[in-house]
Image 1 (cartoon, protein in one colour):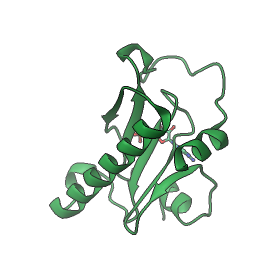
Image 2: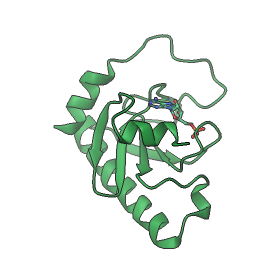
Image 3: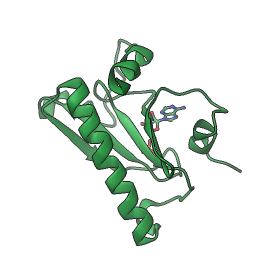
Length: 128
Ligand code: AMP
């Protein structure tokens, strides 16, 4: 059965896309930890990121680097932080978190944000 991210990539589930190339897809996280929280996903499904073949893993990191540069330039943040978790969605992905300070990140286990950001507006700003 295809993962939820494969369904997003195929357009079967809506998302706020910010970037893609032939092998990767990047879209805004629906439950952001910072403004512009983005997921970078390989179009080919792998469950655990560190089981990916080296070439595919390197290509994913390279795609994340491009998306991080895009986020930094469009949002004007100081640093884009990154992490890999993967317990919720078993389709490898890299979290990118635009920040201006450590305290900007609402880490896992903390209560959800009280206000819902306008993801459509944010995605349009990032796409340029
Ligand atoms: P994890 O697998 O633990 O790295 O977390 C998966 C991430 O995917 C979480 O941050 C979710 O908020 C995010 N997520 C799950 N479903 C969607 C969706 N339909 N659109 C955007 N982000 C999603």
